[in-house]
Length: 200
Image (tube, rainbow, N blue to C red):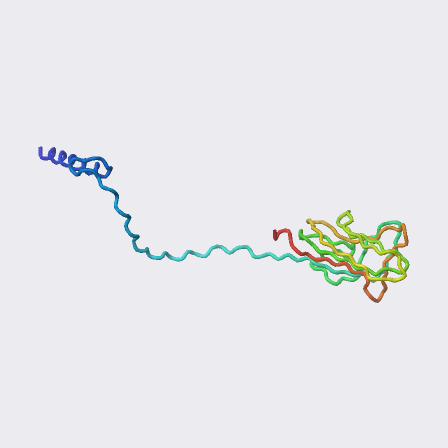
């Protein structure tokens, strides 16, 4: 009998508290008031321990490609297009320029700068093409004249992997020639990478 009275007491005492928390009218305590102001923030907690060092990143990769070659051999036109082959290697990083074929091979895709310099021959036409793969990218031309002069051509090219760049002499429809001798380098062909494609 004593246990039954205790249960009844707890049941009657909890119900008004539940109504109070839910905002319901309560005969014992009346209606709930408005919520009070938010209290101030508590003190900051203790600073945590420093995390462990992360894994090292990949090293920065620099890309280079450059060449500069020359020729002491004079050129004369024939019945076919002649690829210029050079006999003097001034700069040839990583051997990207093939001295045997006279062609530059692109191993690092990107934007390249090329320049070609030749010496014209008196009373003869000078007619060359700077080639990208099988297409003429630029022409170097000088009309026949009583004076021989240095003539140059330069350009930028966007190259993909395995593209080739070289120079050829136009075939002999006219007397076409480039001057040089065994003592000085009159013909030069140069190129270098300006920006690799991987750099974005």
